[in-house]
Image 1 (tube, rainbow, N blue to C red):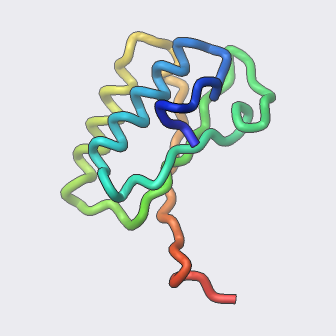
Image 2 (tube, rainbow, N blue to C red):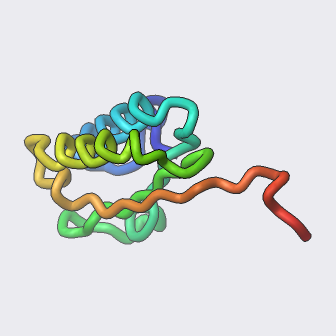
Image 3 (tube, helix red, strand yellow):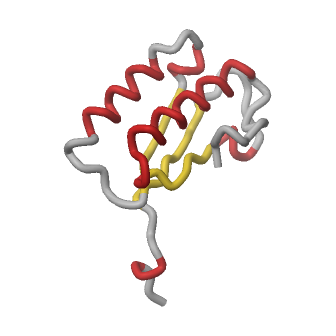
Length: 105
């Protein structure tokens, strides 16, 4: 999971800063809805280079309300505008997490 305690999600310092900013802003906006943020794709498996896009997944406790949607769009714009080329290489998705009561065998 990406959070402030993760020191090595990537060897690129400027990408670490972008990811930290993304996670911090998402956590602040989503509050208790935020479950975690995870790298996927080439960064998750270690097959990346300086030209790779950065695939990530944000897991939520429940669906985002229409009230929060403009805030998420604002977070996306703010992170995209950060002074790092990595900020324009983020490819993200959101997933609503399943709780034990939602799963059936």
